[in-house]
Every structure is written in C-alpha cells, then in structure tokens.
Image (cartoon, rainbow, N blue to C red; front, side, top):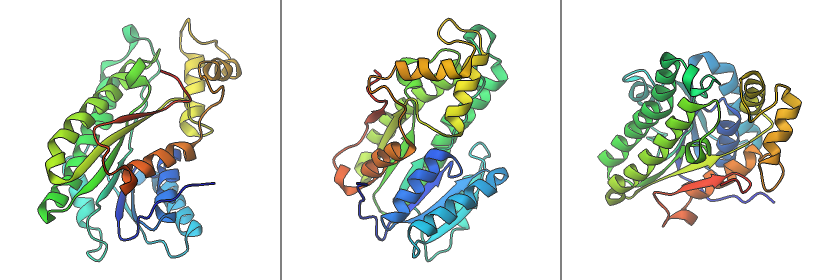
Length: 271
C-alpha cells in the first residue's frame, strides 16, 4: 500500500520534473494534495508535460503549473518563479532534483570541461534553486522543507564517475550546511542518496556507459553489467522510483518535522 501524507495547502517545486524520479515525486505530492510547480529545461518540455498529465490523471483536481529554466543560468530561477500565478504563491516545499550524470571515464581521462558542467548543474544549480525558494520563504516569514537529490556515488564513490561522485558529495555537504543556516527560519533541509534505481533513463544510461568504459569492476556487456550491479545490493534488486518518492515525500511531510541535515540512503543496503 502506498503511504500518502497530507500536503493540502502546500506548494511544491520539483526540478528535473521530466525525469523518472522527478515525475514519481511530483505525482506522489499531487496525489497527496499539493499544488505542484514542475520545472525542467525548455528542451524537455514534452517530458514535463507528460509529468503534468500524470499528476492530473492521478488526482483530477490537482493543480499543476509548468515552468522552464536552466539551473546554471543566472537569474533564470527567480524569473521563472516570478511567473507563477499569485494565487498559487511561492513554493514552501522543494524537491531539488535537477542533475547531470556527466561522462563515464576514469579520473585520469575525465575532461575538465565536462566536470565543470557537472558541478555547475549538480552543485551550483542546487544552491541557486534553494536560494530562490528560501528568499521567498524568509521574506514572508514562513517555514518550509527542502530535499536535495544526492547519490550513493557521493557517499562511497563510483568507478568511472569522478565528477558526478564529487558533485553529489558536495550536495551532501551543502545540505548539512544549509540545514544549520536555515533552522532558525523553520526551514528543514535534507537529502536522499539513491543507488541503483530502475527501470528508467538514468539506469539504462548508467548500465550502457559502464559497459563501454574501461574498468576492472564491470564487464563490457550491458546485460552482465546489470547483474554485476544488482549483485552489489544486499536486497538483490534495483530500487524503484516510487521507493525513492516515498522517502522524499516523508522528508517533506510533517511526519519528518524534527528531521533536518540528514542524508537518507535509498540503496537496498549498499553502504
């Protein structure tokens, strides 16, 4: 049975809303009564509209608003949030989920320019979106809750993913620092660190790219790589996007009202 929380009267901003995890979280929040503001790149408008459609299908009365911005573009987040209708109001819940996996190459061969893009999206972009939401909450004297998407790669490292692992470790550090800074304002900040989550776009890409990259850890056959990854998981399966969404919804809910500065592993037991 899917656990739902009461998000009636709350407004949730979901970035990376065209992706698998962003979509699952948006639908979960809409189902639980939240007004959802869905954000992604303009180039992913079809995927975001699909998320909006699913939100409305799941709860016909759901209120959904779509915005487009690039988290690496200065001022773009503020400009997009300023376009949200005044009767919706600023978001008091944030699932800060936009991200970029980057290339799959060993550290000695990793292109610095791609590493810069990974950090720009996954770290600076996360900070930019969080600041835009927090500024509005503080101006109104309101509390709220933020969940940032980190990764098990940022906890334990990941072969052939040096920039991604570094960026997600930074997200965890940023989450802990922001939780301290924002606690006096009644704003909780936590992170989730998924490991192998599928099926979906990121899972398929990760399997294919690890098979193609030189490594002593993975074979060069994607089907074998899948089994090697699953073999690392104590529960011996990949996690589902709904299992990630359940943790995110809990962290955003009042059931987690005394939880801040935490990074929750959604890994099937990988440590």
